[in-house]
Length: 175
Image 1 (cartoon, rainbow, N blue to C red):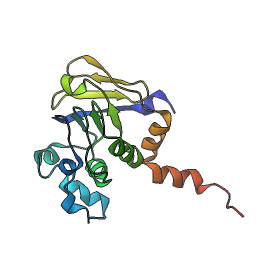
Image 2 (cartoon, rainbow, N blue to C red; image 1 turned 120 degrees about the vertical axis):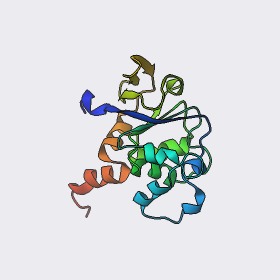
Image 3 (tube, one colour; image 1 turned 45 degrees about the vertical axis):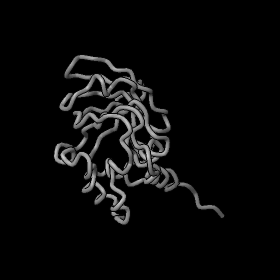
Image 4 (cartoon, rainbow, N blue to C red; image 1 turned 90 degrees about the vertical axis):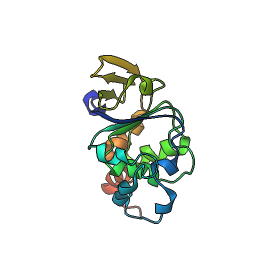
């Protein structure tokens, strides 16, 4: 993997506070929707419905600590991914949300201070492997935890299922 392939560029669509739970991200009453792309229609519907109209493909959501807490529903990460969100940057993530995001191919970047140093509309460059966020609008460098190379590979593949399909497509059949 080249260094350039782990760089994301985008705009901040929203900066949120702490404890954004999965009910806020994706309301539980829509859990019966099985078409993942339709989950995006209900992203932040109850608390921040304006985010859906602001979010452009590749944009970032920035938040304080404990993003994705609450229910372990995968639909919360799916709604973000299929809405076109390019990455979520948070001071910390609930463990299961973080795993769901990476498995779906949605970058989840841990940065203790990004929510303090970014505003809606700021242009960012994220180095996933290097653990650095550059706020191009404010000429700031913001520390972030580097992503594990295996997580970057999953993200580049589009998630765990596409990764496994590609990996085993050319494998000889057992027998």
